[in-house]
Length: 471
Image (tube, rainbow, N blue to C red; front, side, top):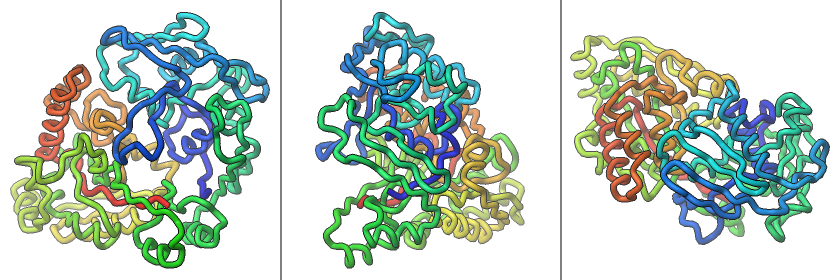
């Protein structure tokens, strides 16, 4: 597979996707998203992983019953011992108390974790959180780790610490070259994994990755999500008609982030002007090939996302209208526009940089001079994505395994990942209400209302959800 070099191997000390992709070979979670041909794209049903089953005792109490006989990888200091409830408690105690864990907010509603017996663990919440089980399934920071490994190494940054209960064991890691994973012979899912080994080849250059895919040197699509760029798709289908191709509308929104706590972006007229300035369909056709304009929940999350024409009063701000953009800027006190900075990372593919350059041109057309700043992916994830930036940011933001994750993360006043520094009591109250609402249809209505309100306020200028093609 084409891979990327992880910054380190500690799941609680970085949110960089490259590292969590590597760890997904090694670790397991309590629960996971169901996989297989019978799962509709854009839906994420949850199934047991290390937990054999679980019970929701009441709105704030969850009990998990672990599989018996699950073995850690046969490496020191664990040496293939059995997974027990103390491991789960240790993992989430560390998750909740590690100061460097940028994803800690995801489980902020958790009050404490208790061991009931050797194979039973209980989570007690401070308040109802209807998405709790879904959150535990995230393939991001929810990996179960062992206390002896942290005690032995001090943290989990070294490759030697990547010891899990997952389908593969990290056999070898060569920085900037490759990671090699071997089949875990004691993996608890019978007859899995289906391959004996995986070579994760670190290939920074996109063109090299595509060439290696064409010649059979790598077996999964060469893009960061193991897909094929739309621009390369037709030629690949012609030369490789025997491969399988599957179109999936992205659950990640492509967005313009801005510091809404600072002028001029604290003025709704400026934010609406920026939204009017962007030709979303033009971006799709010029850069991404295929896709759809999207609101605050990525269009690929089919059960929850509203289309633009369902956004009510906020739908008009998605129309490409440079004249109205200039009128709004004038009304806000910027008849000649203003200067700002536009940050983008080069570490998420060349399409994103091409997109940012086109956005820069659209903004210039209405009088906004945006200086482009291209940032390395590690620095981008450590600073910019967490709200440490000036001006504007062009990037993907808000992956939607369910709607709470992109919405609460980006809009709630108490979210540590509120990159736009949004502080709106109305939307925060709606976000907290949906987290308490058990009735599915009542919750869906609140989620829809949040998307409509967000479209009116334009705290984030949501642009599009690209079509991605898996191969």
